[in-house]
Length: 76
Ligand code: SF4
View 1 (cartoon, protein in one colour):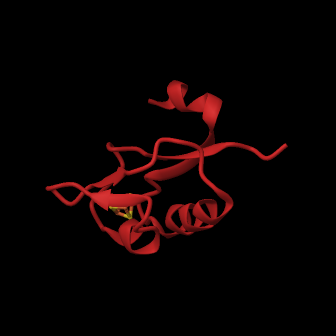
View 2 (cartoon, rainbow, N blue to C red; view 1 turned 45 degrees about the horizontal axis):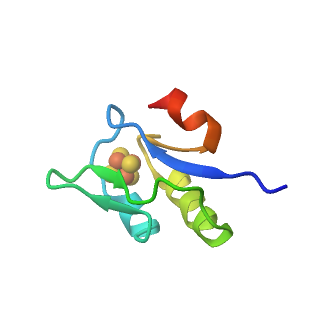
């Protein structure tokens, strides 16, 4: 069974570089102050997971993470 993963941003770590938005524009947008906000709170498809993985790896502040769906509420 495939894992159901969701993308999370830690607002305390986010520094507003915007790299994530370039790497996964379908999943991440920037708010009015330039900080990342995740657009999809549901589990990611396999294609979305690839984009999300690139964004997680590309974030210099390590503000993004992929977690299994059941762990989402524990992280927020
Ligand atoms: S790349 Fe990381 S630090 Fe920069 S906006 Fe995206 S989540 Fe925030």
